[in-house]
Image (cartoon, rainbow, N blue to C red; front, side, top):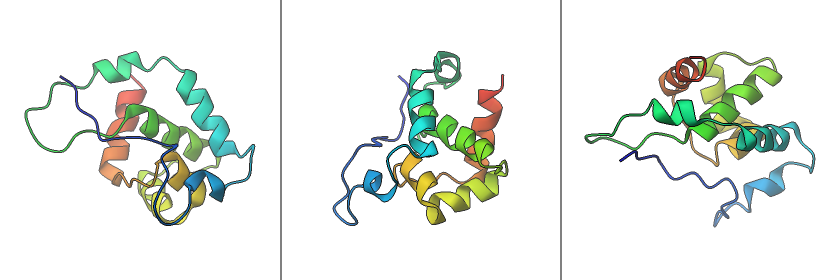
Length: 114
């Protein structure tokens, strides 16, 4: 059975308010999230093997969203994308306030381009 970390981009946070309120309607991050939501990511999901322990993986939909948004704004570096999940609102919204490290982002990039 495949396990992933919870990913609820529409989840309400106790503090601060809903992350979706941080960006104006029509922002590029929402467009990217909508487009990725329509993509067939089955080949990426199929690449995950049943874990025998350890932490669950991040949702591939979130990882593809982070990478695609990064490319759209000229940010291809995994380290910069990792930092952006802490410092830039659009990336925080796309990551649902989760913070994958740069190595995880790089691994996800390799999975996405096969």
